[in-house]
Image (cartoon, rainbow, N blue to C red; front, side, top):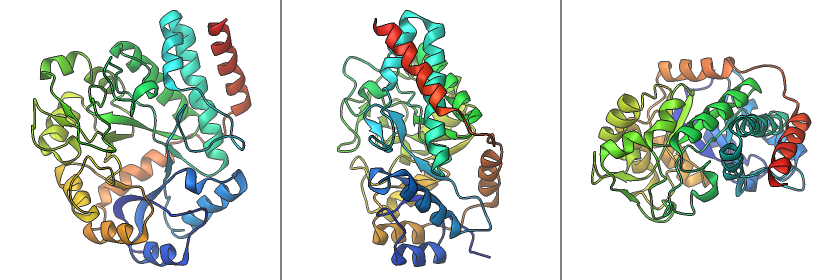
Length: 340
């Protein structure tokens, strides 16, 4: 029996598990893993990597995550995986024809799920439910479906439903909303200065529409109407009052990547503060073994309730694979007709 996992999802360094990583993860198991382009060389290699990661913990189901949105944020890329459109193209289609837009959102999710399941990935960090404003930073850009809260909510809900039906869990992001940020939180800490009533009418609506999603990810943004000093990831007030109460999200809450420059402190302190504020899981992505060890050492073993909730979400996934080729064909037809 391996030790109880720590509430952290970690990156790994390369295309296979190193002996150093293997020893660390066996001593202090993380809850799961997140993969990036550096880990995804080609399908056979990637399937071997996910199999190897799960083999470290044969007594439990280990979630393996990836950011596979389409457009700029696509870790499984050509030539081994097909190119996917960004969310904005789906939103543009919805504005012309809502029914076709929703079909395209479902087709995109189904195509993504088919690719992920084929290589052993069962959680997709998508969809992005942040709204697009005229001054939204390019860190979000065309990753957003658009600026209409009702549209973003409808497309996000359709994407989530289709992804789960095809056997992959969605992670809605970035709560309570990154769209109003004018700087990229990968590099600097953004401040959201809109009144709370305005956020209620706009930014929160897509997340509220999708609040029954099993997993969500925080935003490293300061919401000045609630906490003028701490980013949402480290703010008990934002996570409790906005994410849990006003938006109503009750699932498993992941931090965004704790390595981003919007946050201060070392990896261990960032992880401790995220969990103290109300995150269920600390996400640390760079794959550096020393930093991974520091994050794991900083956290107590995960609560049984968290493990049970995660296991229940994973166990509820559809067993049958999706027809990715048919989904891609439908998506192409919908977008091509719209462009004609």
